[in-house]
Image (cartoon, rainbow, N blue to C red; front, side, top):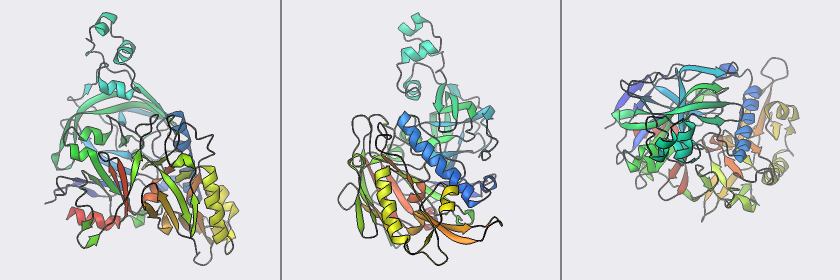
Length: 478
């Protein structure tokens, strides 16, 4: 029997917290954070989103996690403390492993051009306590620095450090530098409350009072002891060890999103293949361990098919080496898929060979959106099917057309002639030398739309299945 407690999202839309009986799995709504007021044209939206996708991907090779780009990503909400805070909305990010949020008093420097915050800054409750410097959580937030070093930074006296008696000294603030911003935050513990009154005691989160160009917090879902799934494991290993989401297709149009995207914690493998009369087949591929970026969900890519032509992936996309180079990160926090330049060029050349013969190239649109190739298509454009071939027996995923070819009206600003245009929604991530020491590619959330993506942390595999995500939400909540 589902339990529903309705929450009002201040500028998004009303939805409900829900639980669902699937061997104690938990169903949560993900809301797409549209920010139309900050984008004057489709060109502006695409240019901003493509630039942030590129910045996030390239900064990963400096071992720095990046938050999501405002206006194009997915949020979830919960409450903290006792009595509970107002609902806190954060971006879901499978590419980082810490939960942080703005705390009062809060200052965001250079945020004038950013989307508004999703929820007010948190006022710490009386039940919140600072995380001590001598703790595994503090060490995890500081890239595994030894507790003795952290307690010295916290000005714990030497004799207390030697006797491990620094519990009254809080963990020093941690610093994150991002693609176009940064923050400092302190670690606190408090009770986190999810739907159905499920409460996680001593939940660890970062409390940021000052950020640079980052007005919205992040709920990290990656590997790591401070991620939200890892901390849920303290309540129920099932909730933290297996989760999935199904991102409702939107094409940057809020009118197309009438249901939230379901996030399922504790996804039951035995029951995932059938809901009602729908039979679902998942395609699985093994996760790859990245020793330099252990919080990433990396997989191997064998190649990409454009129409009937299969383009082999370079060797570095099939595995991750000892330096942390290679593999493909499956990421909810990057909008567009990023490919190494040699594979990207081959895919684009084949795509252009098939589409460019029949459609005029829209070079001006490419310059204003950061995407390409783009084509004017006064009639419905015929585009080849794109398939992703992951490492594993028959691990092939066929992308829906809307996941890789975005069509919109050019000239809708009233200045130029209105024409239909379509752009390939894949991006050039740079050459292999530039990508050394980090992921070779990223599978972005735009290409994941219309799929249920399952993360099985116990068996270390990721699965994909085509779904009608809005229908999945309806079937699970009833």
